[in-house]
Amino acid sequence: MKVAKDLVAASATPMVLGILAEQENYGYAILRRINELSGGELDWTEGLLYPLLHRLERLGFVESNWRSVAGERRRKYYRVTDRGLAELVEQRRQWDTVVDTLKEIWLGDRRPLEVLA
Amino acid sequence: MTAQDELEAQFAQWRQHVQRRSELRPADADELEDHLRGSVEELVSIGLSPDEAFLVAVKRMGSLDELSREFAVEHSERLWKQLVLPGESDHTVEKGRSRRDLWVMIGCAAGAAVSIKVPELFGMSMEKHAAFYAPNFTLFTLPWLAGFLAWRHQAGRVVIGIVAALFVLGAVAANIYPLGENSQSIVVSTIHLPIALWLVVGLAYVADDWRSSRRRMDFIRFTGEWFVYLVLIGLGGGVLTAFMFGTFEAIGIKPDTFIGQWLVPCGAMAAVVVAGWLVEAKQSVVENIAPVLGRLFTPLFTAVLLAFLGAVVWTSAGIDVERQALILFDALLVVVLGLLLYSMSARDPLAPPGLFDKLQLALVVSALAIDVLVLMEITGRITEFGTTPNKAAALGENAILLANLAWSAWLLLRFLRRGTPFASLERWQTGYLPVYAVWAWVVVLVFPPVFGYF
Image (tube, rainbow over all chains, first blue to last red; front, side):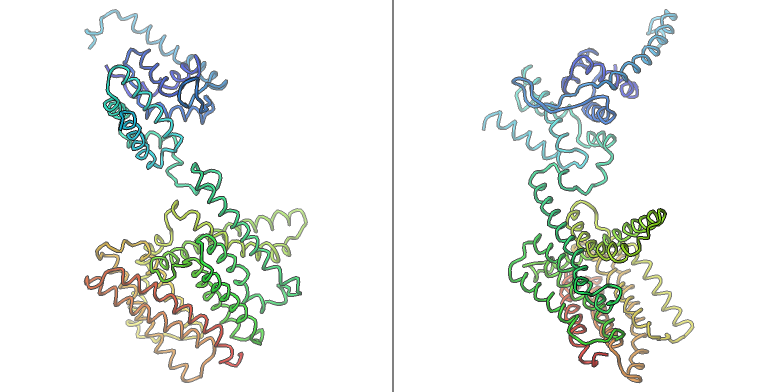
């Protein structure tokens, strides 16, 4: 299964902010985590992730700095800011609305997916 | 070579590819390299060889084209090549160099701005001694520009000595002759000394390579860009002056003395140096604009000149050669020469003849035809009424430009018929530069005594 491009783009910001809200992190690890959590279904490209991180930084939602954690090589770590957390809350509210609505619709319709297709 | 070395070499090669993209900054390359390394490490840990892991990791990252496109959407400003000022560059060696350039330039510009006020210490006010400032004004700024360029291009002692001596000669020529305030010779000197001194600046620019045709062509390019930048700075300065005048007047302070005596003269002198520095600093950053203007206006000028020739034939009207006419047609030849030079300066010398070269030939030939008509009229006048410094200078210029353009037309024709390479046209133009210099010096040094200081 492949998730549509528009959907990937729309959900990327809350996902990145959510992951960074857990702890500060660097690009490759963020990508790994997305991959893991989605069971390999969401396969982000670097061309999606890094420009997105840079955009979030420009908007002031995340901060970055280059440093090396014990024994590792130097990496660019991203950390969510207070503004970023506020944005995340707002996005979660919106996504909750969307997801809840979809659930309502789909729970009312008990036919299996194969029949619909 | 161990597998690790090989991997490092591959990373280095990959980095080079990434750095060629203007959308990707070195910091981005670092970040992407770290990502690639992470990916490689993971693949190695599940049993791939470093070589295979690298290939797979690069493949996963996708094509650089796509990656740069994604970066460009976020960083669109990077597609506009920016003039990097010192301190912003990522490269430390370049940073040091451009910072030194900046400071030397500021020193030279300040020197030029101060120089124009020095004569005032000796009682030469700008208001009352216009006859002193008119022929001398380039002497206050061009030595500073020449100094900056000679420093930047590391001119040898001999060249610096010659440049300095020529500036002294210029200063002597501008001031030694007892010319009246209303004499024609002052006007003629005021026009020709800047030309002579500009070519001295050229000598400082080409430095020790003064025989090299390529370096001389570089100076021609420099001149075009310098002029464009000077005009732009002038426009900005005009806006600044207008605001300054308006705002201060609104609070009852009249700034006209400050503007007229300080801001405009000092600013103009400094702008000459700043424009030179800008051309040097942005050389590899921004596309040259002079050749673009050349290409844009060549067809338009050709059309106007052909229409004019057509009108002359159609109405069979003789050209009314008034006093100003010869100057006007000199200026026309200069413009045509400029169009030719700057279109040439950006042309690939190895490209085969094309439509544009034919257009240029048409432009040059029509300008020549018009000029011959004018010359026939004017020589009659001179033999009739005798000559003056004005007429003699204008006529001399006309002859020099005519000779240049006639031979250029011949070379262009030969080139179109594939008889000579394009480079011979370029060599002709660069070889001709000393002719302008010699003529300008002759006018400045020899004309006043010959015409009895009239």
